Length: 347
Ligand SMILES: Nc1nc2c(ncn2[C@@H]2O[C@H](COP(=O)(O)OP(=O)(O)OP(=O)(O)O)[C@@H](O)[C@H]2O)c(=O)[nH]1
Ligand SMILES: [Mg+2]
Image: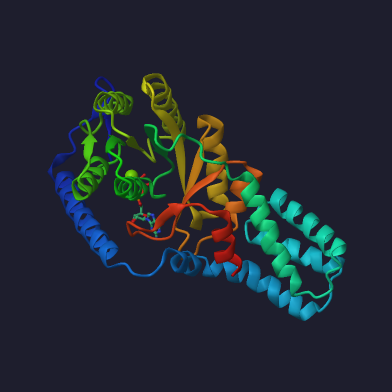
């Protein structure tokens, strides 16, 4: 744990043991990154298959339960809608989106004289796509223009990994990249980003651990402006002494970025771990209040993810989902596409 000296606002000496631990962590991190890069090169499974397999649990929790219900019930009545409503809420869809889905399903079932319960699944699919599509913005930015991505989120959600994945994907598009290491708080955070920068062959702007993150952001933006770099990706801390400290720091960083960005567009992306369900929604609400985020990166949709939170975030909170991640591999992050997501979720 890093302690801070009051006078210099810098970490105090951490001692030999801590340094050894850090060196061990760095080497473990380095090995892990090597593994991820190698796996990405061998990766053959398609993105959609991975997304679909990642959403297996969400699919079982939502569509599986609804299908069973439809089979058992055998007819469409008020009780059926109530039961579907309960399933959607349990699947973390959010109250507002669940109400909207149920109201629209009920109306359409009446207008279209749907009598076979199995048809409800197709209606549900349409409804989910409609909601997600209506809330998915057309591109936020001029795709050819210079951009600065401020990557924020609580610790462990996948910020640094997402930066590496985005850097790789933008590099493939032929765009020039710079990384900014503004998580100066956590031990080994700068080294972790540095390892990625080396692996991906991109430049990085970094200061010493404990330095003022706003100063890193200032330098990174000025370097990006001077070199006319297309994409600057800024890593930030996920944890400080307190949540209030973190929010104050991020607000300051954003203010500096807005002020210094010159002709680049600034996009604040909040990274949320999909396995945290309702907690992730609470994080989105809080970060949005303080930082006015432009979009969400939803990571860890593989495993025990709660796919329903996509609707809760995009519909209830009206924050667009920009990217989704389904694994630790370099190709496991893609732009969010409503039709594809619903196809993978509902099948
Ligand atoms: N399964 C899975 N793991 C992921 C995904 N994205 C990131 N991870 C893993 O989550 C862990 C944390 O990722 P980081 O990128 O270090 O998270 P962070 O937000 O930068 O964390 P701090 O720097 O501590 O704030 C790592 O082990 C990643 O490999 C994903 O989409 N799926
Ligand atoms: Mg990090």
